[in-house]
Image (tube, rainbow over all chains, first blue to last red; front, side):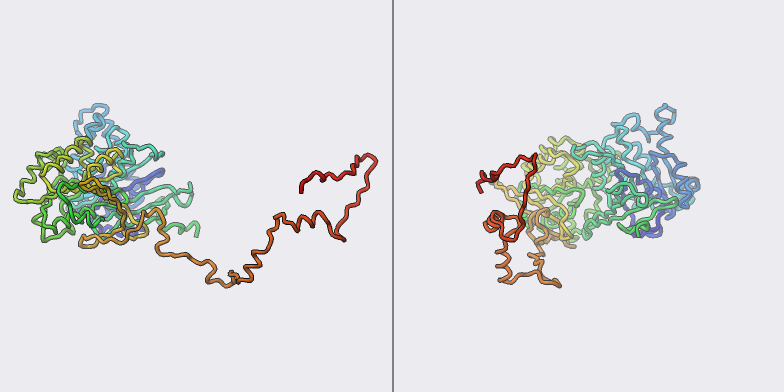
Length: 267
Length: 296
């Protein structure tokens, strides 16, 4: 959990807005450090977290969360964290193991969409009624959604999935949702209809807060790893979209955020 | 013109609000709904994109009984099996069934939030046919739709715009002035009117027009800064008096070949440098003046 990011977003594990859909996107850089932030943030807040880890193994997140002071293994054992290890499950599906779950069905039949994945989410965010521990509002974390595009799923199916997750997690259960989308489109002239850009735009229309991470426009810098544009989309009528731009540097145990030109390396 | 479009809809009208990721058009859509409710119209909303609580937030509570929200948000594709309204029910018959919930209404306004959702699941041509049938069929008096223009191909967006009697394209305004709207209106006689306005939406969802400035891309700076005089407020004097200006204009420029310069060069005055040339034995000394043939 990055303290500076909490103050930028005006949240803390004790008080955060319910029903938020936070979209993290990156272009030419890696924004997964923000996913680690949100994972440790919501675990510290005592929420029930459902994590769809489609691109990395559980031990990867566990090792990084350890450095941020949160133990994922413990959280999983206590039932606070439900972790879908996409890579392991996909191996089972592709090797036709006898598992039979429909969660990763889209690997066999991309045109069927992500309904199986949504069923998994729905079953796991509700939580056992009368369970031993009462957790806070449910949280869904997805890392990352754009990988399904390269597996053959259409942009429309991915947007339907995020719509259903939002309807269930954010609106019905007043929980929160964080999704990571990675864009790799270089050219902007071709109207990339089925690309990650269209997925990103569709998700921006659905979400309430976006964090768009990019590399510095001037190139690589050792002390500043990139910039983050935070945009609060006006859900209520009073607020127009409010945007703020920061630069960041990722350390071993966290990340620091600062206004443009205020990096400690240049001051 | 924006206020006229929001206030009055003739029968068979189709108002299209186009937005993009930079500015959410739903606020303006809610203004339209509020205006229709205040006009004592019955409003049916097909809500695909936001929940009922979110849409009702800020709307006029006193006319709440005239607002009918059809929940297509929680299960638009029928995944849970008991969906109130799915996207596949966007047909004339099903909409007619919905509208029969209010049989005594004379003026029904149908609001679609949003058309982008439906376009993702249906063929654009079929949608256009259904919208046209809705417009002409007399089932509803007016249709108001929200479209996210950056989620579709230009051809699709263009087709829907052609059906509309009024198209309002919204974009963020420059420097926090409000939002920018470009309105295109087609009257029954076929006349086309266009306008661009800067507006803002108040807390009670009424729209205030701030100015009728032109497109934010052109000349935004002239609005609050008239011609700035650069020679004012300096510690030194950059201005010229009249005599100084005359003298300045009289001054010949350095490389202009004027008459005085020509005569000075051709007829060197006394005391100026003279060139003494003693030809060598090997030199080919020609007495003629090589510049004789110059027509100077």
